[in-house]
Image (tube, rainbow, N blue to C red; front, side):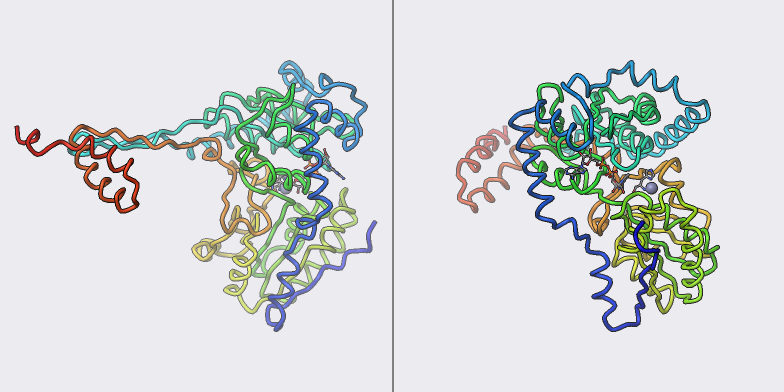
Length: 442
Ligand SMILES: NC(=O)c1ccc[n+]([C@@H]2O[C@H](COP(=O)([O-])OP(=O)(O)OC[C@H]3O[C@@H](n4cnc5c(N)ncnc54)[C@H](O)[C@@H]3O)[C@@H](O)[C@H]2O)c1
Ligand SMILES: N[C@H](CO)Cc1c[nH]c[nH+]1
Ligand SMILES: [Zn+2]
């Protein structure tokens, strides 16, 4: 185990606070050249050697003694079998979570629309689901049945006909809950591959893995880096990296609750980030004491300890207003407003993947079953990204129908603008459709 937890303290009143905060937020591995090069090599190998490369990387990185791709494909019947192998309470919990996630995402569905102008011209937008989506479900340090639901259900709500899932199974351990979740969510095909090689396979296709239109889902640094590199060849949702939680607390929540909320994200990954901001210095002391007392009781104490030591912080601010400013600066994946009146502060929150309102709303409820998606932008990307949703699996085409009169009217405008750009082909194409005055007068 790493040295016992000594969580870093920052004070927003310090002159170099901004610098310390920037340092805290920088995620070193993001810019690690060796990870980048390794991922590029993996992508190249999968493009060139397809299934053979997948088998080799799976042997090397997941410790699987597989000999052919057939060992890495799970038929639908295997997913159905998993449903019979889990306990009744587990199945009920998965089904309840799935139903809540589905209801929430149904509200995000966008429909096609159009309107008709006076001369009969029709303008609109046609919404079409992707043909085939690739879901990355992480599986290195933990298994994530909940991520299966969060990835697959929005795709199915959007109407994607073929949903392909990849999930690593380190040392060959198949997680029955993951497979049961895939069955409940309606996943069409499952491959037990992970890391950069799985992302490359989905993006470029191999003899066995079909090429998809978009790769979505969270993962570790290898997965995140691979998604960056395949973007353009396929669509991606976002870069959802190691989990993060930022708790803003007025000092009146039970410190044990807050310590455990910080642990809940720190336990995902040594690179996860858990930060508490409060205007109450004594409260920060109490939470630090709770952390020290509760940490030895945690099954994943090692991972939590490394995460809290390396990337955690307790930040003292002058007042709640400054706490909100810090939250907007961090743009966290998860923001807990553990305060008396969260509604009062909500209008001022501009950047966060998901906002958990009030002392009773632990982030963990959102991870599993509240309904909103848990695949969220990390590393400050909530400044410009949104949670995974139905809209990630739908695309839009513009619809333009010009009536004869409409084409004539618009043709005059287009002609002027086209000639202004010296694009006479455009101009003459539009001008052909202009109805001559004599014709119009007849
Ligand atoms: N943002 C979200 O919505 C969300 C949800 C769940 C999990 N997460 C995050 O996803 C991440 C999951 O990471 P994980 O590691 O548990 O699983 P993972 O599936 O992302 O990664 C495991 C794979 O990484 C590859 N790998 C591991 N070491 C490698 C090496 N040295 N070289 C090349 N490839 C290597 C292997 O192929 C392995 O199969 C965590 O950071 C967790 O916090 C995020
Ligand atoms: N907190 C993760 C997203 O950052 C999602 C998750 C899955 N299981 C537990 N938590
Ligand atoms: Zn979580």
